[in-house]
Image 1: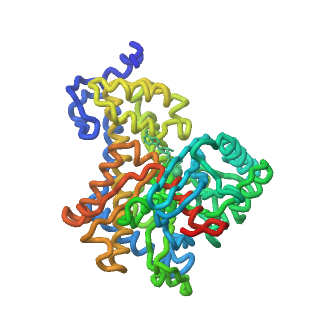
Image 2: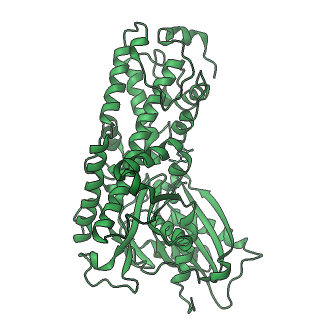
Image 3: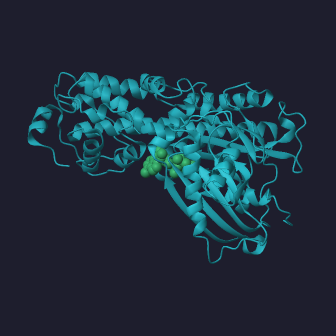
Length: 499
Ligand code: ADP
Ligand code: MG
């Protein structure tokens, strides 16, 4: 974007020549700025933000320890902690012997994805897959349950119509579906579960308290689609199942996308709230619902403001601090405050900047990839998304804000992962540390935001030290949850099978 001359002059006092600056390593030196009555105010907002968002080792350690403690408390009794520690009913993970055609549906945020896979058993594994993605219209996210599920079922029906070629349903069977549903559900069996509440911006009426499998099965029937749900799977559980299909060292799965969550392999005899729980393997998968974690997090007035105005105030605090739905919005709030404090972006405050969620996480990520001298890409994003006309100085400050928020998010996510590993190691000595252990990771935030990813890895390395962290492999398992859900549908098929 090129700056109109008038506004460039208006904020000219904030301009100063810079040489090549790398956004993530740049530290503002406010003393270098000439006069400018309000510079102290911006300086103040930024330094206060950086101080409050700081995650030095003691903070990370406290978060990791608290995560481990809250996990234990949640396993002890229902409601024992912020972490629901939900039993997944997935006791048997895929073996590799699964065969046949299976579908998966993933409903977890801004999009839903449909997938079909032809499984060929141990020798052939995955013979073919096909997937499609459909975005969910905003109005359906706050409509009725029937409207939402009808929309999904009709998308699924259209996808199923296009089945051909390598995809072959065994004779005499209905199509079976693994339903990945990444919202808090009280699972009652492998193929039923009651929605506790919507999160991540969904406010659909009439689903909470109902069995979401029944909601989908009924909608498929209404759409004339002969398909049934065989496994209800949280996306983290699907990711874990999908990743473990290829690599047996996978013990934890984490999602960092619109929202966030984590699950892990737990011993059935280490779940006091479910004393009778048995499984052939002696283990089961626990869905932590760690988005609700809140102990010891470094929060700011911007987080509190966003939380207060959210549809679920006081809830999902970890999610609101580290996940993709919120990082951009936190940055917007900081920048708005800066714009209000002084005329960093001209004298009037653009309406777009005042609009919640106008700046999104992909935007702050894209800005952080701009390494040019005049930060042109930052300028255009600020102009297009927030209506801001900026000079280089203003762009640098915005980058500082983006970096602060991404850094806090990534490092806290890393601390959360270490918390889970610590809990597992404590209760299953030698199972995690000192041997190769894989954390399967999925989600658009982790996948697309390199700075966030490296901050996360930094925190894991700092907390565990070089020797232990070397054997903890954080592996991107792209769309593992789709195949994982289909594999779990296969493993829990309504039809007799020999795998
Ligand atoms: P969902 O979590 O909705 O199931 P994804 O795992 O694909 O879906 O994650 C999508 C989220 O990832 C978006 O809401 C956004 O917050 C984040 N995201 C997507 N693209 C980027 C990007 N380029 N940079 C940073 N974050 C991104
Ligand atoms: Mg997802």
